[in-house]
Image 1: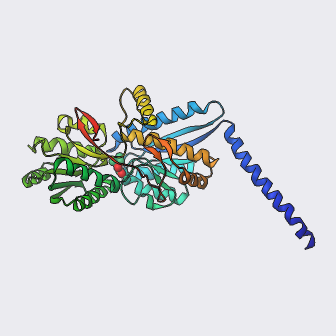
Image 2 (image 1 turned 180 degrees about the vertical axis):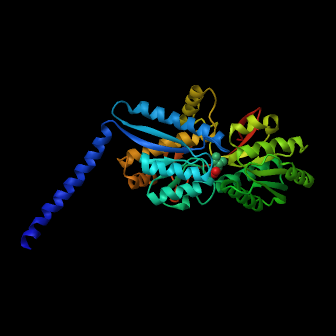
Image 3 (image 1 turned 180 degrees about the horizontal axis):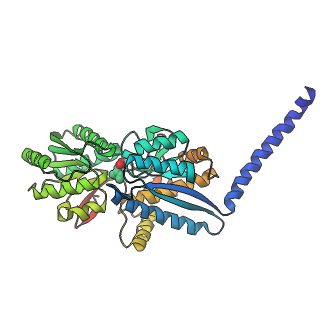
Amino acid sequence: MHNIQRLKPLVVTLVMALCFLSGQLSTEVFAAASEAKIGFALSMTGGAASYGATQTKGAQLAIDEINAAAGADGLKILPVFEDDASVPQQGISVFNKFINADKVSIIIGPTLSNTAQVADRIAQDAGMPVLGISNTAKGITEIGDFVFRNSLTEMIVIPNTIKVAKEKFGLKKVAVFYGNDDAFTKGGYEAFKKALADAGIEILTEQSFAKGDRDFSPQLTQIKGKNPDAIIVSALVEEASGIVSQARQLGIAATVPIIGGNGFNSPALIKNAGEAAEGVMMGAAWNASSTLPANSKFVAAFTAKNGGAPDQFAAQAYAGVYIAYEAIKKAGSTTDHKAIRDALLQLKELDTVLGKFSFTAGRDADHIPVVQIVKGGKFTVLE
Ligand code: 1QQ
């Protein structure tokens, strides 16, 4: 008994020395060349493929920059890109692969909230940090404490969109048109309804559609008959493009603005709807015309590499890679998922293309939203 008591200080010192050494060792591991695997679950096929395409480009640019700057002995990123095919089941398979086979440090994605609301549960249960870069429906980060996103939610963006639209067009009465089978389009619909009520704008009619629909003329004919001041649309880009084109084909005048949510932020809308896209307005999370140094550098590098300007989805992907990388470095480990999760929460005012970035206590993004309008075939930020 006596002997053990006497040994106690020695044991404490030994344990402390070991802790110190292991801390030293983990920095040593990073000082020697090492790689952090990041799993990207993005929509490369299916309805959300046009978002996934620019997300991939934005992420790849950040990876190239980080790996070039890391030099011969720094921490590099080894990306694993997988197609979530825009459907929840495939998202689940990809997440399982990242967790069990690839053993990634963190997962970035999936593209759609509709997939995230099921796939993120897999990550949460496995204690794998996941960073959404385009999920804007409510309820995603509530899945658990390993789920983060850098994408501003529709609950934050839409009230601003409605406020700006009301000032610009003097809206009093509108029609609402939304997708009724997707987490994002349903969430956007609810956010629009609340924002319209708060702004004292009357809803003349509510119409809905389903994913994959191609003919929107029955609902648009109903809407036209009500003579609204604007049409509020919660849709992903494939359906949004059809709605915008067919509204103008049916003779709904260009003086009746079409106002959308996050799904409208893809250049695919302008490509698909052409002239009919002119004047379409949407809320956005990234200020494309920001002259902050980080943003100007990103826009120039992206344009030089890809022969065209980035969109919001590319910007959020690019920022997401830098956020994940900082957290892994700060955690001092590529395998300690809890430490990486904790490091994400501790990131403060990281300089990103979205502005100075920190997560909220609820692991969401929090910055100023903007409103964009299509002018001369381009997204323009309303100042
Ligand atoms: C979501 C969205 C989509 C528009 C992402 C591409 O915001 O699914 O949450």
